[in-house]
Length: 430
Image (cartoon, rainbow, N blue to C red):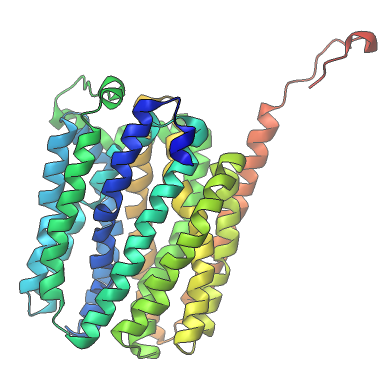
């Protein structure tokens, strides 16, 4: 149906076809990394802090997204993708040769360095290649494909690990090759005429100077664009709650519930991806009507019940119920995380920079959210207290988004005229 609606945009239709083919290959990345923290805690007997490093490495290294954007502006996109595969994907194969948690963490951290590098290219494709009226629907279709891949892939990996605890020595190298195929398909989009005409990379200063000003430029955008700044504050508040839950989940499933690999995969990743799969399309249509701010508001509101569900979880079934609630809220968050900054950017050339800023702030909240949460858990041995804090942060994030939307709507109303208009001429009022 989406392809039919793009019949008036033949180049967008062709690009979307390639994008749809590439997405399942690219989503394999999340299937093979989802079980790494559980693998570390269970198979490699990693400590609390080693496990926390594995859950926080990818979000913390999102701090580098703003610097990756500067590289992206200076490179041909297909070369940029090759570099991204070498830095972010290839090191995952090294985990297959590891026998100690310390060496696993080395490869995980190296790989995490490049995870934020995809955001500028994603923003460029979404903003430049697809019409605004269909952007939310298109992204939701892509997300459905991605979530389907992660759902099936993660569950199969969990089953495989139950049969053979060393299965990661096979599926990690295979995954690296599969993701490489996806990136080669994605590079075909960068050769399409529509992308090449609208893709802009014209830096006015040397790379070294530009990298040195990256933080300053990010701060300047946040200071100048009040709506974007408030959007980021709302997302940052929600994100702290998300980080707390992400950090504590491996301890909940391994230490408290004592689930095996298949049960972990089924009650967390598989249940999450199935819920996202069912919710993503309706949410995409909803977001095209409500916009990213209002969609974020209801998504954060639903997520309040996730940490509450984790606190109540006593077995695999109750954990699955909490995950379903998580998936309903995350269906909105998944779309607004990307579409929000892309939409709020003042023009298409700024979309990669806005999304890079958004991803960079993920790294800040990973540091502020995950490590204190685990420290509190280790100090008290109590998992409920940080989860209560997470629920409060979700609620606060929803409230901030609601206020932002209210203020934006108020500012868009036409100002009242200082001179009264005679009723006879007031036939076409707002």
